Length: 181
Image 1 (cartoon, one colour):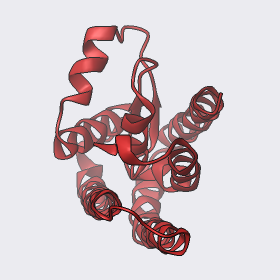
Image 2 (tube, one colour):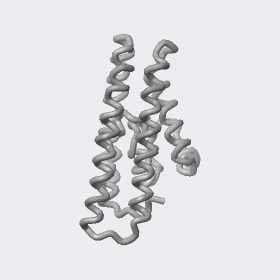
Image 3 (cartoon, rainbow, N blue to C red):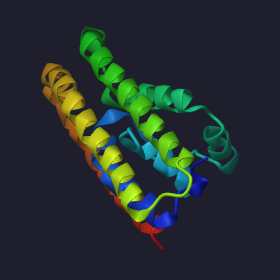
Image 4 (cartoon, rainbow, N blue to C red):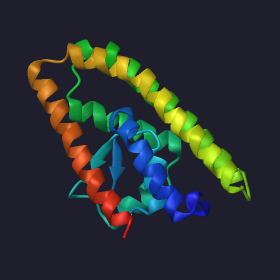
């Protein structure tokens, strides 16, 4: 589906969207996934490193899931990795809803870019600006929701959350450098 976006634009979009991706939902980037699948996942989700048990057949089945199924899987993964307690479910649900809303908006923009046919260079830049604006707006909505959740966490959970996000940044740097080669 995202095969029609040229590789340079795809890499730029992945890099530009990663900051939002760190918070919005877990990004499950298996090494076997195609760059266009990584772009679709990076549109609104935090990275989760590929699990050692990920295999080629599992990676293929992930790419067949709908965007809604992928975001729900990412939400569940992040919920589990952050060790959300029953007392934190209200704050978590607010974060999860923002993640869903952001994912939906980004999917709409990706589809709009694909349907755009032949764009001039200026049209392409305007389209990318829409993506960047949506990224910024998504973060503006997400940060307060995540801050409320983070503030409700125990010191141990906060330390774990910091480690989860640190690992996501490291994994994304490796994935970005591999896709740019």
